Image 1 (cartoon, rainbow, N blue to C red):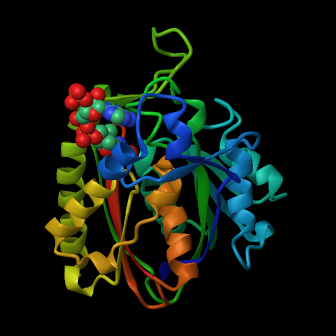
Image 2 (image 1 turned 180 degrees about the vertical axis):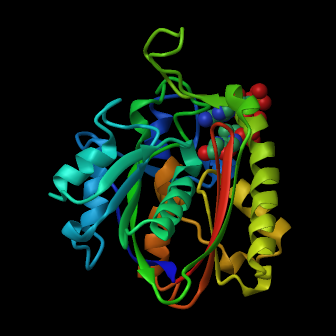
Length: 312
Ligand code: UT7
């Protein structure tokens, strides 16, 4: 018995915010953003809540039968509410009454954490279908006067349908966290002693260095655990934060550029949504095909990190 990703979906809000638009808002330039990050534009949700983004991404999954789901997990750092969870809202939108539903908070690594939790629950319990979503509305937690952060992020959602299967689809994980780095990348909230508004704060330069090292180490561990050689990886789908981070990670893993999926030029960093959006685009564009070994690797606030190898 195994667990397989059987179908995927994604949704990006319509409104596009380009680097040129940002030039009119803060002291920056398209040239700076493009060369330092690889980002050209990002999507902004004007009306749609995180739960609605999650719902639209889920509706985009072909063959999804909501009533058959036994588990719904949403990875998000920007939920609609403290409670009910985004997953409970999604469950109601889907008119499902048979699932357990909860959110996971692990910042940009959230989707891989959610996959890990779903994989573990499905293997140990009588649950054969699960919907796992990464959904974010980071535009709501950005200080639009802070040029060091507001140019980096965007809104969106990606979703996967997991099913129990004869053959193994999720080959293995490597996950970790180190809370000592919490002060390099955070958004405070009501439990803190900070007063609102609560904005994302980041020491980008320091995050950059740890991100590269940690993603490489985590990816190497999952390759070793699953006994897969980097040359057998058909596609690397890294968290889409910065093209320089992605190139450094791919190079250190010995994965050639043609096997690295990049879409951050269009969407920026969508945090927990970045990997499922990229996976959906990779499958739908034919960049990832049935039978391919795909390496997912993410890094985010916490710090948290995670890697996973899936066979499509
Ligand atoms: O999702 C996971 C977590 N997040 C990340 O992985 C992000 C990791 N970090 C990064 O991607 C990069 O560190 C950034 C893109 C955020 C910044 O790039 P950098 O090459 O590390 O630049 P820097 O922070 O060292 O800043 C270089 C200069 C500074 O000016 P001075 O001090 O050299 O005069 C900044 O003030 O660039 C300036 N700067 C900008 N200039 C134009 C910072 N932001 C901007 C901007 N436009 N938007």
